[in-house]
Length: 520
Image (cartoon, rainbow, N blue to C red; front, side, top):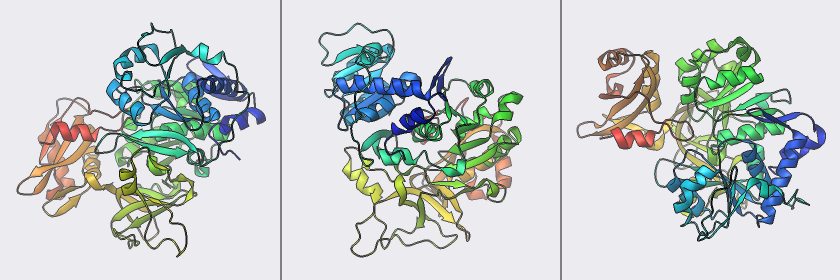
């Protein structure tokens, strides 16, 4: 039984050393080879003083060295902080300062961009450069090493004893307000995300890792693959057409993406061999528009769809049984086998079927340890559910998600929207996703995001930001189509047309930026 993050690779290296584990571009490592690289990286990091939960930040694109850094940090007893390679220096600087990163692993180009920012990161003692070493500033307070130097120390002689409750990973999430906050995951949290029997993963699977490793869903694609002894294919997402190409080349059997990426990918030309090998496709990070789901099922008629829901603080939460997709395509399903999901009123009592409430994640190994260095926000998000513990029991913290949902008579959950994204107009509360679904259903737009803007008469009115499928594009035609499908109070009062909607580094639509840019 794997109890630490690095055990996922170590165990497979002992039982199936020659099985393929990881591919990046033209390089493929077996489990034995990958474990050797991981243990050697652990030796180098240990020599730099990493241990006892000290933080190592990986500011890299996806490559073999990135995976070695992640799992090598775990084996050395440290905590890994995966940083999205698309972030700007100021954003990276905030993360590095916030959790007192001791070792930063990055590329020469990113180090050059980060030099000014690192001057205000006093906890950083070492920077490890993957690639040609850059000229070092003698006035800098940190030492610079290249990756080859890190590996010269050799494999870590002995792996320290690490409790499954110890800190393993800190994932920074942007949230809707304030600076990014670091979600602390224990080894038990990180390993639990990989054990989801409903996907049926085996050593025969080939899993495409397309999402960023700094995103919980992307990180879990590695743990999922290694826990099953499957073969993980690393991909740095640039163009939608790269996805079917890699799927055909490697015989990919499983892909999970967020809905905005699927919107792009499903429109590509897929080779027959890519379609033939795909066993399942999954979606996470928000509800999948019906029209896109239908296109995916047409594109991959032999693949099983898994509609999943979760959040970094309580990943993974729910999935919709594929046999229910036709009957309940709007549902996010029921709780995963190792999770408990509640729909509750503000006082913690259970909502009746059909009654809107807040989604609360409780129980199982998925509840994170809290937010790094932010007890105030942690106390708001991580708190007990009243009446759920017996007198004398230790109060068990749950994650109050802020997501609005309802459950039907059979216990299937339907996502409504974020509490702080709900649009309040004319006395009604509108879910942005309901408006967006109708915009997609017109067949006129490729991307759509709805939000509320202040309106003296209505409280708020609906503003819709879209990227059209084709030009010329007439907003009046779009609104006319939507008026047929929506009550008047839900019809957008204004439409903003862009060539492309901005996305966050995790591939989701950047709703915060859109509200800031077009919300007045």
